[in-house]
Length: 286
Image 1 (tube, rainbow, N blue to C red):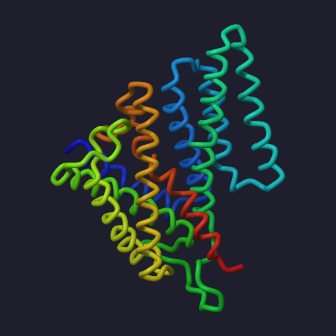
Image 2 (tube, helix red, strand yellow):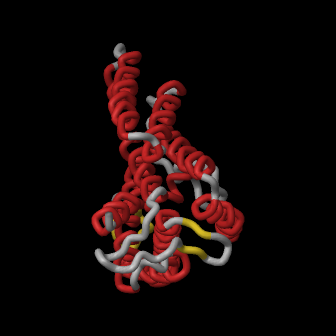
């Protein structure tokens, strides 16, 4: 537990700077790296994926992840070509059909699971304007005394806090009050009580984060979005546990001491990002 806390304290300032204040190129490099590392961890769960297959999958996922920064014409070409290249590469193993199919399906899964979900995170990060009801005054860019940043950057930080608070709340509530298994076949240690505690922590953690980094959100909306992100984040956590359980893997990687791999830390964030993006786009003015 101590190692987990120390790792979080060391990484937190860097993540805050990258999300809120970094130049465009540094932020995109950060999200692309997340997609690359997460995809590599996912594909390693399938032993059929060799080095070339993982390399192609990681490159494709990273490319898709940063697509919101690319023009629409290039975007269409990327979405069309990446699956084509990955599926075509599976023909290299046509002598063993079982291996070929597993490589093809796992690579394309990685693009949708890690690459596309990470792309919605980038899309949120790039939102310029505030999200307010039609006709309401447009507030200035948010800031916390260290500098200014766009609404989108604040929204990503809000998302991270809401999901991470949910993870922490679920962990401690489950350890102290957990009695009833939530989904034993997928994750034996998770409990219903832990899930409820995590949902409460996400709801109020998101609300508190909005007060600091996303003041354009109202109290009720911040509570609602925080709870929704926490709920979907728990589904993301269970989904990754499903893959790990199926492949007898405890952690997706060892990059983050006390936390496991990139997917272990960001599985909930990746799932919640499309939901948050859909919410914001539906409410966005202009």
